[in-house]
Length: 357
Image 1 (spheres, rainbow, N blue to C red):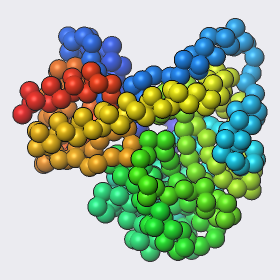
Image 2: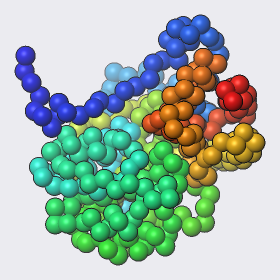
Image 3: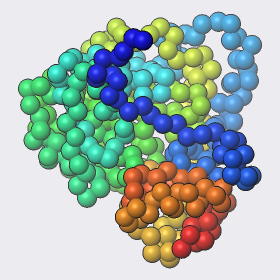
Image 4: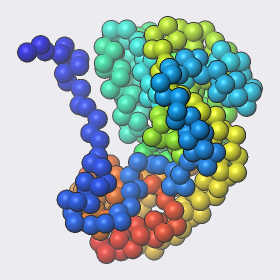
């Protein structure tokens, strides 16, 4: 049997959860609530659903390889040139494109821990080395990350807001950090939860792009736009960086239905406001109830809450809630992440949580 090289065989593959239907069958439960994957509980825009239905008869045709109409609308909305945009099968694909384009064997990429696990996996697959810096006060330690830059550094990943903590780095912190990053190092700012942020201290990463910095801003239609199943994300960067990444991007990497739905969702401001309102109210409710239960948590700027549970208690809590039909995400032995859901889902989670106390 053929063997994969060590830099591939040593990767721990992502472990997807079981389908809800299968979990319900195994546990003998019904009507379970999934609060594990940071999905938008409001669902997709009705406009997006209508576009999907309209285009089902054209599945025999290849997609528009340039995402022409979505690119035009998004460029206008963001006030950038069309050549500054790149689209992918979720922002995951854009991360992979960036790494494959700019990292060679022995090159280094700096990232935080805990943060989005995909960064280190893709860097390793490209024979790069991940330089991991622990969070400080539950957010990226940008000072230490800057101090780790060497001649081998080609890329720095910053999730802002960070997943799984929901924290942000402020404009002041990012400004100071960017001053320390030399030319030739690509700063990848992952803003998957950008639309949920309420803090006035949140940096506008587009300003660094306007100054011509080597930056790639990642955003997605999977979260607040509610199109996670369609897998479509995008990157914003300089035309030169996008041009290089496009050299290895596969043709037709974003399917037709994804493009149509994303374009419709982009125009539905009413749906966006509704999703934000549901998230804001849900966040305040969960804060109040978690305080009553004396459960520590990190205030969030995203659509999920990171709970601090103490030694070895997260797996036990996960299993207990699962038996009650509530699915959350354990994050190691002492923490767990819960997605902010609809009011009834949030209440169901709290009531189940009370039974574990």
